[in-house]
Length: 161
Image (cartoon, rainbow, N blue to C red; front, side, top):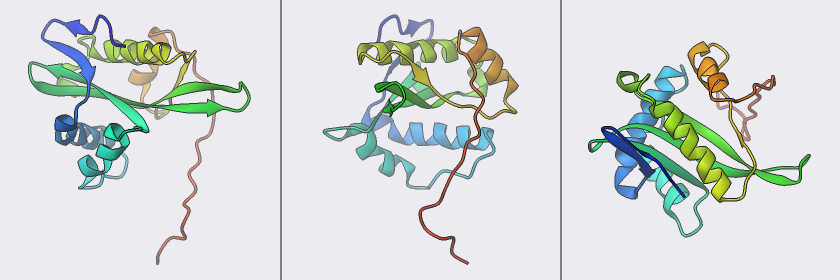
């Protein structure tokens, strides 16, 4: 599934269950960067069945830089009613600040595209905050097209007062 993922100083590979504490730390850094709510303290435990059950709901690729995880991408298979086909939803793509500009983000995005193609899926979709102009430029340079939409979130339980 993954090809050409080795780069000087590291490799992109599928995450393992042993990586979950480091992945959770990367998720926390990503959430802080995106000015989102903090991740749950038990995130690694919550991610384990999603990523490593007999029928995982999602998958995670990591950038292993000499034994240190410096980036990750998480994806899941989704369905488009209008196209009557599956697509890959790229939920997260993040590289630590110290390693941005080294090509790891593009390598992760290419690895996600390869994983989608290996699953027979024709395209990948994702979102990024509208204020993150660096990410928007990065995605445009990678050949992605932006589609304007408004994102909504609807709680399933009434807020507790």
